Structure formats: structure tokens, C-alpha cells
Image (cartoon, rainbow, N blue to C red; front, side, top):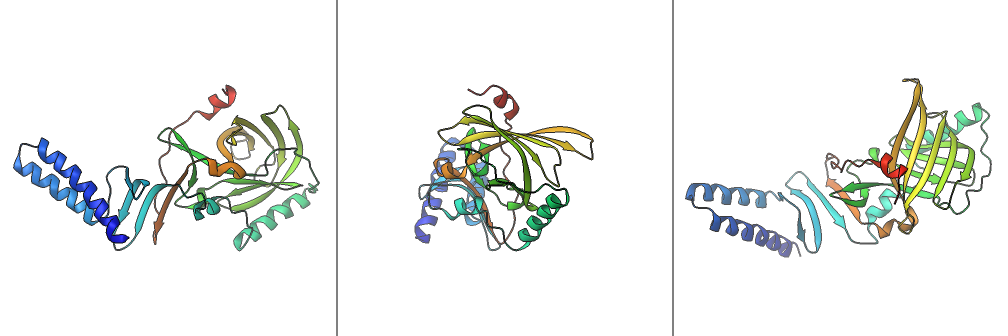
Length: 264
């Protein structure tokens, strides 16, 4: 299998190199280009997106120290789907969660049962790359955001771990729009509005209005989120590397505020 993979990669580079060879009139320039392609192939670096064994790669960098790849994972049972939607509270997350609960109790914000109707209970962050929306498995999960609703709490998962958040009020504004009034240690005053932009696929925009105690003013943040129960209907973009952390992908700049105000 590995031999076939490398043969496929070499064929890819060879065809591209021969195409340049035909268009190149100067032998010295031609030689430099061929040597460059050989270098890229030997070191496992792919200069542009390409398909390998039916997998679309945006980057594939392999050497003796690490193997970094960015690709679309078409396996609906992929372990990366499990990674992005893992809501297990364990290890250091236990301390973070307990600390957030302790804060709520100290403020007499006692968790109470809340009905949120048919609103899905688990959500993960989505990203837009090259004009396509993806579930994103990041190089570093510190930057991954997800949300879980229990029968009495709203839980934010950030790089610092899960934070228990008190649900002061919940309203269903329409068949596609929901609003929470929330309180937590990191956001004592917060309004969250969830608005679907594609209910069939389970895609929504989260509008967060919260008070920043350092800036002493209200701020607004928008995030594209997807229902966990429907996320396998959305392509999975994976950024992973063996033995070494890599930079995150530079995603498309989308004006989610504009889409939120004027959904189709």
C-alpha cells in the first residue's frame, strides 16, 4: 500500500514536471524546475492541493521528524469526528468545571431544570475554507470551541476547559431563532442568540453579546456552529501532525454579522 502511495505521488509530480518541460525553452531553467520537483517529492511536500488514494489533500509535508497533513476526511466513522465532539469531562477539565460550578453557587446561581424544547444539545465550531463550510479538526484543540446543554446548565468548552454557565432565561423567538440570558465567571452578563441559516444541515450562527470587565463595555462576537447530531452531513477538514504542533489554517474572512442580520 505504501509503495502504491509513493508511486501515485511520483506520477503526479512527473506529469506536472513533464508539462513544464514542454513549455520551457531554456535548459538551465528546466533543470532547476525538475530538481525542485524532485526535492519536494523526496521530502513529501506537496505544493498545491491534490488527490491521493481518493483523499483530497491541501498540504502533505512528510520527513523524518514529522508528518503534517491537511485533508478532507470522507470517512463518516473517522476518529476526528469523535475528537471534535468529545464532551467527556476528565483530567484537568474536572478542576475547571468544578471551579466554574463553585462560582455559580457562591453567587447563589443554583442550576435549575430548564426546558429548551427541540433545540439540539450539542454544537461544534464550523469554519469556512475556500468557500466551503467544514467541521474542523484543528492542529491544536486549545482553539476548538464547542457547546453542550444539559437539563440545567449551558456548558462552554474552550481551551481552558468546560465552564458551567447559569441559564437565567430562555426564549424561542421563532422556528429558527433561540435566545439565552446567561451568567458565568468569565461572562457575568451575556446574551446568546442562536439563528439557523440552514436548519436541514444543522448550521447556525451564534451571536454572543457579553460585558468585558477590562474594556468596561459590551462586545459582540459571531461564530458559525453545527449540530453534532447532523455534523457528519458536513465535510470534515483535518489539520493534523505526528510529533509536532503546526499552525492553524487561515480561513476565509466571512462577515457573519451581516449574514446573521439578513439570513436567506
